[in-house]
Length: 400
Image 1 (cartoon, rainbow, N blue to C red):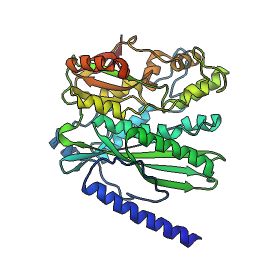
Image 2: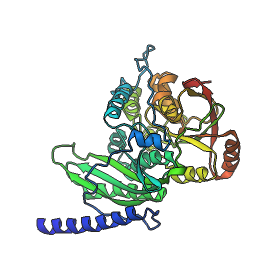
Image 3: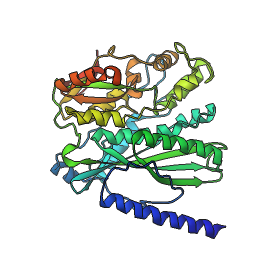
Image 4: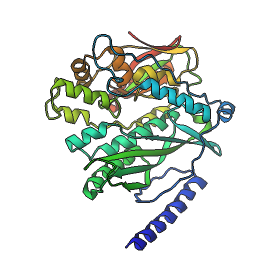
């Protein structure tokens, strides 16, 4: 049996390797249904990200990470750091990595390919998995996994080409794994990209019974002369926000701490809403790919920020040239009930909320004034978009 499985895996690997050569020889966008091939190992060799010199030659600005002090809340409210996540430490690690691999720091890594760039991103879903285990909702966690990577690479204007996943567990529960993979397939369909394959790792004694971990990897493509890089952003440009479905896939270490302090369970109704806390918190991350590419195609988009860990405060400045910042209009969109509950139950300060959660806006587009009017007019009936702020002189993000 072992030899038969090994032979089958070898045959699958040869097939996928041939398929990948076709993709790289002629980088067209797949239109066929997602291709699912498991298990195999592909792309084991690491390709370096675009070097700083290449970035400069192609006028692609290297992102600068900005972070603010994350001291404990003097009022006694909970903070992300209290929950075990130190954003400043993560930013420091990225700075150190950037010294070894110049050019790191953007939402996606760019690799030159003829007149285009391949844009790659990788991510997981964090401790949202803990809630999946507790609620038994496994069908949508795969959508979260795809969303976190494809939403990152579309910020460069890239069309996702394919996605790979990594599923690890101590003991393989085939029915459970099938639910998870079904969500990944759904996410790829929403992104119009191929699920090219992945890796299933069974590691006895490494994970608790019934638990698993996920990682995802997305690759897209964009013409060099169409890269969205933020270099042309100027004071007076407009920030357009696209609504989120809720917490998405970051901040769950703090969410779980708040839940424990609140005395409520995941089966209790979310205050101010008609769903349970579990249903609200497990709402899948919005995949913005098609909507964002459609808006980009109409012109006027200068920069895009995916609002994940770090919230508005850390993510929006990543797309700005030096010397520019943002003013956010606090009452310009509807903040979902789940965030109001998190803040109230955890006694969390506004600044901490804005640096941890998306607060109801999952993607921010920096556009010209003319483009903003068209985007907001087109949004009527087709989709929802808000004018949430503007670009100003002076670095940082302020809230008014």
